[in-house]
Length: 444
Image (tube, rainbow, N blue to C red; front, side, top):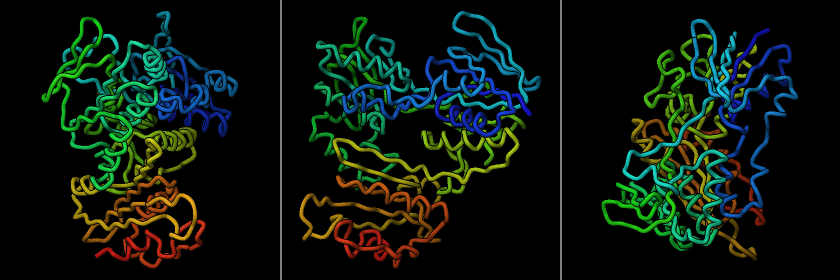
């Protein structure tokens, strides 16, 4: 039996802890986390801020008490300051400055990621905040309650920025959305989809500022305006949603890291140092779309990596199946989902990508009631015809369809496999000529 030290207890760390405690009770588990809470679902922050859920209580699925009840030793609000990888020892200090040292047989790093904070003038002003932790959500929620807060600038139009902009509008505030790229969500979707999302945002009151990079935040102690290369805009609050970077400072000098600083791991989540594992946002993943090491910070990836590491540290060999980066978003009831690579990402990865697409209503025209259009694009490699990615969008919930494309990427299926795929038809559900079949048949 082993003594296992786990540093970090959010999604990946919680998954690793539960795997160890539920399946291998003979091992000793010591958990360190610098925060005061465990397992916060940050993806629900915008729902809470936008009053689409009553309160944040349901955004937590574990706790210090739950881990202790399973016999883990838990140190909350405790910062790990140094790891002696050769001596296998962790050195930490709690909120009162009390020093703690723990030896280990196996170590799991689940230190997550940190918000990217741009180095611009005024970033330290009051009412400038990032959005990641529960405490960030509390801060933003409190700001939205203030009647003097009328205009909120959101920097970054990725998933979090778009969701926060929606939440700001739902709270009756004016939302300005700034993005250096020319459209929203460009990392995940092609223009055929992102332009629709841009329209949805604008139609619901979000003021779009694409192709504008923020240069300065102005104010006398508190935010008053934001400056880009195209002008100056009054704002009472600035929310940073630029993205995240791996929180890998503890082992950056001792472990092999990826280009962005994430710990490089194998399919068992083991780092370059035997007995040391890394999971979640601080670690790399294996992308089945590109066939190589990548970095995709998603809660789903974090949970799977924690499960894999939990079994391996306890002696059960288990390898990750790799990931496709499947994801989705719903803004003002417009739904978009994707998996694998869009056209730009496929080109960057060295493929010769092509796409086939189709748009149709979900159900036959004779069916009464709402019958929304569905857009589908499948990206594939022209040389091998292997499916590289897929994107779907509709006001209808077609999200389950993306899982099939995720499996197709993992199994390296060709676009031609879908041309005569056995897809059932019933008017209650779909069209006799299904958009998946129609898109595949039109692939050249």
